[in-house]
Length: 429
Ligand code: DGY
Image 1 (cartoon, rainbow, N blue to C red):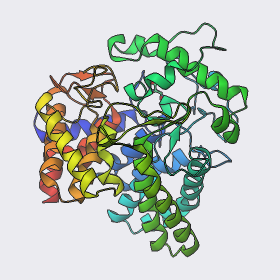
Image 2 (cartoon, rainbow, N blue to C red; image 1 turned 180 degrees about the vertical axis):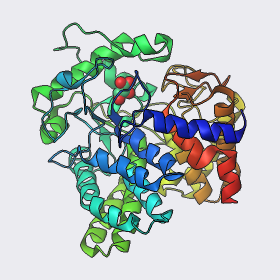
Image 3 (cartoon, rainbow, N blue to C red; image 1 turned 90 degrees about the vertical axis):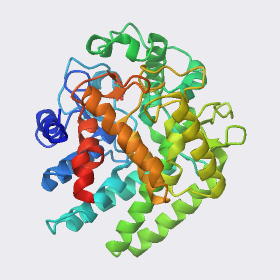
Image 4 (cartoon, rainbow, N blue to C red; image 1 turned 120 degrees about the vertical axis):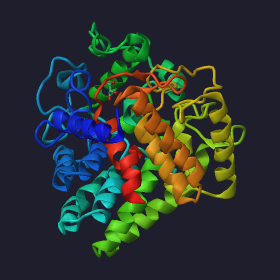
């Protein structure tokens, strides 16, 4: 298929997955509005319909909880093709039935991008309307995912990281006692080859964590204090830090001086705290289990987001470039979600090895911003090759380019349109 045909297919996927203002990641497997999926999807819509891009994010924030949290799933209607649905979550924190935790907060960054690329003259007004909600969401992260002000964001569930079965969670997840879950029937493995999905023992614990949080009524302070899973994640930490920098730019554009000062304080706290995720042996930022005090022992694709977050001191940058080149010799397509030299690497199992387009986009953006255009371009070319080989799959084998997981996937289409498509690159030149 030519690039122009792929551009057209990508647009059609977004339009087909549109449910009237919000977009499902893919029909069947993920039939609701997912938080960071929607935000990346807005970038795709913005390439041909800016109003619709804003609507995607505005509808996501319609589900914001009273305490500031923006949930990872909004269940606008019940759909039996997905498990676990609203009745299993048992939440009551916001205006729309939802899951009980959040997802990586990319929204401030994308909103800032939408303002920069605006041609309608309306973007700053729409950003201003969302600004208080963004502030409250970031404050919620600081209060309940970094309650001791250590300067690194934790996740209370692997799903909150957006990277469900990443090897980083294995030890912390095994420590979760399986209880209060009863019999259940998974739906994901009826849509997708089970070899590409998490195992049953993972799901038992995913549900046990949900039960523990349900037992404290999803009270955010109690969840932070008692949740059996509480792991500081370089992915959410870097994305939060980047988003806070973009929120600061927005605050300055809007003349919000008090908020700008507040955000500067967050940035200082995170810049200092992120050092606690640095692993001296691996020379990279890795996850840190706050309950056991142990660092994980592997490099994930999110370790490469340090430059995206503005952490680009010489040691960090050079060691990431070294890891990048080492990994590039092991697999054909970058960036695998986990180090292919680690024993837990699996090229087709969800977050244990496959390449994800939106992660490549963020890594490349950070590398480009620090002047490493060669590695940024390598990521863009690899992403384009994967889509050219296997279409708009959820994720791809870093070894064979085989597409895996769900098909006609919204954020893969969006990232194609906004960044990976050769047409986009020609227009930007
Ligand atoms: C799932 O159901 O697989 C999702 O990743 C949870 O967010």
